[in-house]
Image (cartoon, one colour):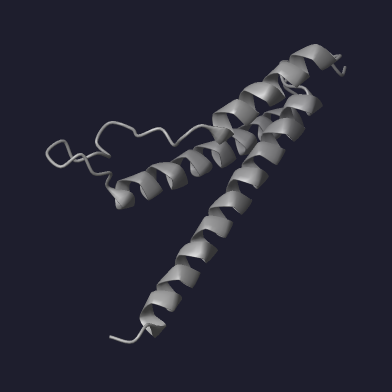
Length: 111
């Protein structure tokens, strides 16, 4: 049985995600050097990749539960979770591509 979706609730969720996406990145504990106030880029990237991985794992577990016939999991939730994981992964790939491009540009600079 497919659960009906409230369009207003979906719109509110999309607006909340948009607001969250446009805000400055959240610095998690352990990612900032307390003495100098600088952000540790490696820890920030690791945190982002870990979040993408968690999103993908969540989507996979929802998909598996749906395939096994769990009555508490509906197709809409599975598809939304899958799309979130896909978008997060694509964004991560784009960031990686930009980093590689910037690195290559710096390496081409004359010393």
